[in-house]
Image (cartoon, rainbow, N blue to C red; front, side, top):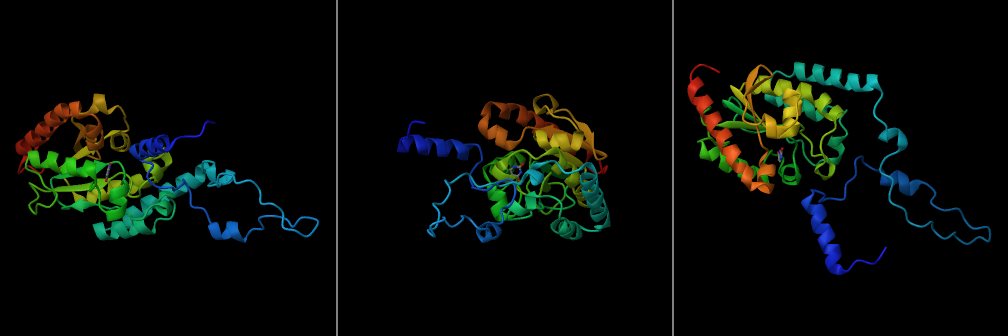
Amino acid sequence: MAELSREQMVAALAWQLELGADEAIGELPVDRFEESAAPSSKPAPDGRAAQSAPRTAPQTTSPAAAAPPPRDAASDAVAEAEAAAAAADSLEALRAAMAAYPHCELRHGARSLVFADGQPGARVMIIGEAPGRDEDIQGKPFVGRAGGLLDRMLAAIGLDRAAPAPESAVYITNVLPWRPPQNRDPKPEEIAMLMPFLRRHVALADPDVIVAMGNISCQALLGKRGITRLRGTWAQALGLPCLPMFHPAYLLRTPSAKRESWADLLSLKAHLLETEGTGG
Ligand code: URA
């Protein structure tokens, strides 16, 4: 392969950053202590140390670890999540149950468990996909660029995650509490094992309506993808009215879609006004 110029290398790195690959982390943790304890080279017959083997890419997954878990292991993980979530009788207890839940590998690559922000009991609960880099660092959902846009969108209809009153407050969480490596999409089995926690989270936060931000959230809450078709049409999720909307990260990349999102915000505002005082 032809050598890359400095400019080409910088451009390739910028492209990876743009795609969310901003950290050199793999799918699974690697035990470097174990690696360095293993004998790396045999002594040569003449007593000299052998030349070290040519460097290869570090192996991040063993074949067994890369294979999908056996069926009953996956359903055990879901059953365990169901039991842990059901036993949580407060948001604090739910956060602790999630922190103690051992089956989701994402926890090992993330810095923080990103639980929620805003006011529990707010009429509107926003459910995004998963923490990104900024959220992982700060331990709060939607605090990066997409979060800044989300705050401005909410402010346009008089909502604010810091507002104390339930009518003007919002409560914000994600389908996944841990950042997936390189911001990749969550796997179906990861969503399945974390859904019991999300269901309990919604029950304990007790909103009147849910806003499902983006495809992953619609997949988890409505069992459907295709946000371009779904957005703007009220549905039911977990027994509550649910409005699918474009994810703010998509709006940052596609400003022309802000027009549709403005219509969705107005629909949310109208629903809140129509149902004020009815508990719906
Ligand atoms: N995108 C999400 O879906 N959630 C966050 O918390 C941040 C970015």
